[in-house]
Each structure stands twice: as C-alpha cells, then as structure tokens.
Image 1 (cartoon, protein in one colour):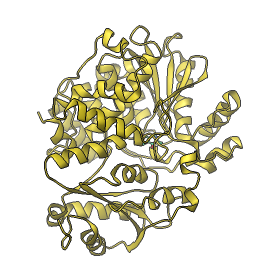
Image 2 (tube, protein in one colour; image 1 turned 90 degrees about the vertical axis):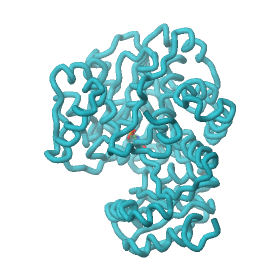
Image 3 (cartoon, protein in one colour; image 1 turned 180 degrees about the vertical axis):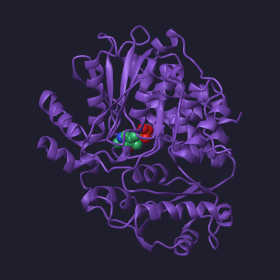
Length: 463
Ligand SMILES: *Cc1c(COP(=O)(O)O)cnc(C)c1O
C-alpha cells in the first residue's frame, strides 16, 4: 500500500496498473445528513480528508480546497438545475475552462504544488491535446511555484475557442507548443520524451493524466453533494453520466462505496460505444474511433474502466492483469455471466449518435429553455432512455451531468437548436486576449531543446 503523496505524484503504478483505495472510507447516515446544505468547499474537505491518511494537515487541506473552488464563477460550484419531473442537471462547467475536468484539476494542481514544496521537489509536466482538454491542465498548473507545463497541440487543427483558451494563458510557467503535424504526432512526441530516460530524469517529467487517483477523489465530492441535496441518505438517487475514459462515472461508484444510496448509474456513450457494448454483452472489444459532436468522449479504450474491472474480478489482480493482457494482444476480453450480472445490477448503458444528440439539445431547449452542450446531451438522452425502460424506481431523482458549457461547442449547439450560446462573462473577451504560442516542427530534438531552455529544471536555468 502506498501513501497519499506517493499515489498523487506517481499517477500510474510501477507495474502499469491503476491505484484504488485498499478499502473505501464510509459515512454513516447521520454523517451524510449533516452534509446537506454545507458550502461546497466544506463538503469537499469532509469527503476527501479520510483519503489523505494524515498526509496533509486538515487546515492546510481546507485552504487548498477553498482556493481551488474560489476559481469557479458560481457560488455553489456544481449547482443543480431541474430539467423535468424527476430529472435534474448538475452543472459541472463553472470552472475556468468551462468543462468538468476543472473540478478535479483545479485541486490537483494545488495538491501537486503543496506536496512538491513539502518535499523540496520540482517537476515538468508535458502533455498533448487535440484541443478539448489541454486548457484544463494549463489552468490547473498556471502560476504554481514548483511545476512548469508544456502543452503540445497540432497547429491549425483545434477550434479557435480551443486554441485561444490555451494560448491566452500567459503565466510564466505555461508553454504552448503548436506542432507542425497531427494530434498523433503530438502524442508520439510526448511518449518519446518519457521514453528518453536521461531527459525524463533531468526534467522530472510528469503527466496530469486522467488516471490519477486524486482526480477520482475530487470528483466523488459532487456526487455526495447532489445526493444529500436531493434527500440522501433517506432517499436513493441515480446519475446519468456522459462517459469516455470512465473516470467521472467511476467517481459515482466511489460515492456509492462510501455509503451514498445510489440506486443506478447510467452510462451515456456517443457512437464510440465500447462501454455500452460491454454493459450489454459482457465483452469489451476495441473498434476504430469515429469523430462525433462530443469529442471528449471519442475514445477507443476507457482507461479508468480497469478500476471497476478489478472489483468485478473480486479484487484479484491476477485475473485483472490476464484480462488486460488479452485486451492488449487480441483487442477484446469478456467477463463471466455472473460478473456481467453484478455490473448490470448497478450500471445501465445507452448510446446516442449525432442525430440523437442534436435532437436532445433541441428538445431540452424547447422544454426547459436550457441550452446544453453535446456531451451533456448524450447523458440526458441516456437518462431519458433509462426512465423509459423503467430501470430505476419512479420516485428516485435522476441527475444528468452537464460536463461542458454549451459555448465550448457553439456550432453544434446552433445547428441543433438555433441558439448561439454566448461565452460566460469570465471569458467574454477571449477573442481580444493576447496569445502566446511557439510553433515547432514535429521533431523530438527541437521540442526537447525548447523544453530544456524554458523549464526551470532545464540545463542552463538557475535552480
Ligand atoms: C472528459 C470529458 C468527458 C468524459 O469524462 P470521462 O471521465 O473521461 O468519462 C465528458 N464530457 C466532457 C465535456 C469532458 O471534458
């Protein structure tokens, strides 16, 4: 077993696996009742402190949490909005980049900095983005004293909003690199930097990736908050989550393990429906990726799914690594009928193609006047399908997660419902903001040279 600090900094375990808690801390019904109505940052501290094992002083942790969520432009941080009878939206897009990743990453950046400072260390974060999630990592790392971040994106292949959300971050420790190549080139370059062990050690390379345990921990908070607001522990609730890497919905699974009465979890996939096929058939089979209106869910492999699979295999790591090895070599694996039955007792999955996504955006706009983004629409489609099929009790409130602000995907939203979604006030002047970006060829030597010259850990830089 590893302590909290090591788990945070390591991300991936040495054997290539993912970290999960040895046992889940759990809350009594009275403890849950006492959480109703708390300010978000106090709720967050209560939910997360049991995971820290004393690694961070409670007062220091409360200060980090309060600072992280002060960057949100809604006082409730993750407010609930009612859409229909028995159907709610939880808005997770009030952070600096207008998407749910901010909820975890705003805290993660501060946690990294705190732990690095305590241990007298620095790191250099490198990452690649196709455009939709890079800005959340930049906003998480900006102005942190003990880390620098270099983000590679394919030049000219991101939307204007995506590019500006990244290149307008002018903090001195943030470096945007526009690579003359594709997103695959960017990913290959990042991999090659990690594979160069001399370079990796010199710069203490690190990643802020979707499998870091602390991201899951931070995401559990809003599930607990929504559940107690809607009557838990005295009434059960259900969630519908638009899903890609299975990180967000796995956090809901964590909330349930901690004692929150969650009757059902609904997985929403777009046309890249590897998860929906799994929950229907018990077979996880990779297929090619098709671009959709919800790009943050255009995935081939759900990296966090391994965490659920560990439990489906009764926490036998041998059985899990056999399944993962089969998946890597043959492109598919299946679980036993009893394991599928266990999974289906909690999870139900539905798929929404682009037509259904647009139709859902239009219907929500007509019925409630809410403008939702395509990712959110996939979750709302799945929520309605789950209700129609009667897979949850009528009296159980169902919360669909609104994972991005509609203004991040203006063309898709305008086409679907005729409304052009305006950027919120905090980003209204985005088009006027100065940009800073360095264009480099898709060449490992050129990128490494740039990183060395600009990172605080790079050769020639004062320590
Ligand atoms: C990342 C993301 C998702 C998918 O979340 P996972 O944790 O990967 O399942 C869905 N919607 C938006 C807007 C995202 O940014």
